[in-house]
Amino acid sequence: MGKKTMNDDNRYCWQHRHLLDVTQLSGQDVLRLIDLASSFQEINRRPVKKVPTLKGKTVVLFFAEDSTRTKTSFEVAGKRLGADTHTLGKSGSSLNKGESLKDTGLTLQAMGPDVVVLRHTSSGAARYLAARLSCAIVNGGDGWHAHPTQALLDCFSLHEAWGGEFAGRTLLILGDIAHSRVARSNVHLLSLLGVNIRLCAPRTLLPAGVHTWPVEVYAHLEQAVRGVDAVMCLRLQLERQQAGLLPNLDEYSKRFCLDSRRLALAAPKARVLHPGPINRGIEIANDVADAPESLILDQVAAGVATRMAVLYLLVMGSDGGSA
Ligand code: CP
Image 1: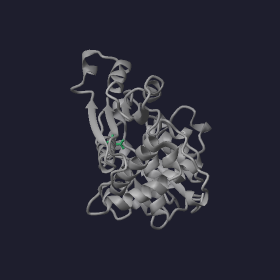
Image 2: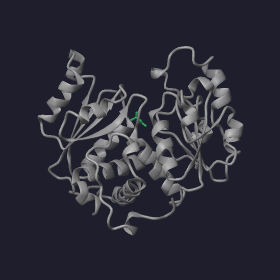
Image 3: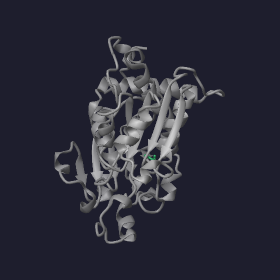
Image 4: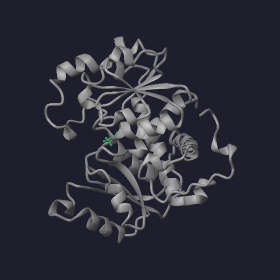
């Protein structure tokens, strides 16, 4: 997909009540979100980074799993649009007294939020709440399943880095693919936009059924990285792994850590992404994480703009879609 923007198609209309997975999005939806995120990025660079667009609206951040980037950026995004934001974590909530996800959701619903952003350890948790609550639900990451706003912000970051040209570009996703919701969402979204995707991981960290994904799989990083336009490193999701999938961390990092010597095999000016949190020296070396090619902190800034776009479209609905 080239530089076409939604301004090329005035009939576009956003039609989604919730954002649960990237599989619900069309190419037009993604371009509309990128267009809007670009506008919000411009606001985020102003001395006064606030607009009253969602004044009087309420966004609840219900994070039943730990988060730094997603939680904080949704909170900043809501506040920059003028909404009231409230955060509930697992720690300190009545989930710890045995209250169910359904009852916690209904309790939050009774307070009249316009949007609930849910992060949860269980795949399908956001869809479960969306079937039971009347407000908009955003999936802020559910188990291994999906992390749609992460994939959208990665897409926005690559749009900026590649000058809007996705078709024919090649991205390598490197590391623990099997346990990664980020990998699943990015493979779907970026292949929709015409990006060629390579995966590189030990066999034990590739998902079952990977042969059905629209990707090329590599066992050796030196081959996988050759000529690519960007590399996305993923951390080992030790909290989701069974024991025994890796011999040891030293062996893993010797074969799969992206360092400057390996990055030199990629295309000139290849960019480096990581959704975070990063484990330096395991999946990414310091000299790459802190290099000028690294987009890691640009991704964090893109997260605020992209989540502003998501909140805007979900709250303003089809009016927002044609704005
Ligand atoms: N990328 C990401 O989801 O980071 P957090 O877990 O810090 O939100």
